[in-house]
Image (cartoon, rainbow, N blue to C red; front, side, top):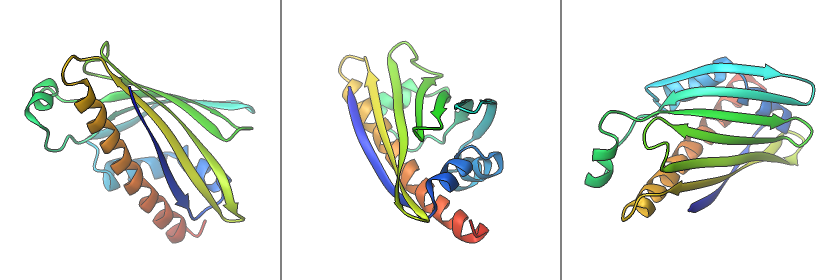
Length: 168
């Protein structure tokens, strides 16, 4: 098991961040254009006063991989993300179900925000990756966490630009 805390400052309030997080137009622009995913699709989003339940299917681009990893994903890699956002806590718990090696790979995390000013907040993502594969599990965990961090870095830049450009 490997874990990472990924922290970014967002130039919008917590409410602005979470509004964007669940906005379809923003997500399509983020995932399909900024992050250049091969696919991103909102499967369902059910809302109540207390929570939001969301399911997303995505296929990220897979960059250059070491030989042992390349063989494992030669037919492509995607995932289904299931998340529950608790409004009162401003906290989203997520599980990610990969399309390959689902019985050997577990990815989960929690995103939450903290205010840093009237119109700014800090987004914090605690990610946990477990790869149960003898000899290469650690390599896979490290690569997935590195990819997640890179995506979250780009997403923070994109989000701050989006907020500036839209005047949010």
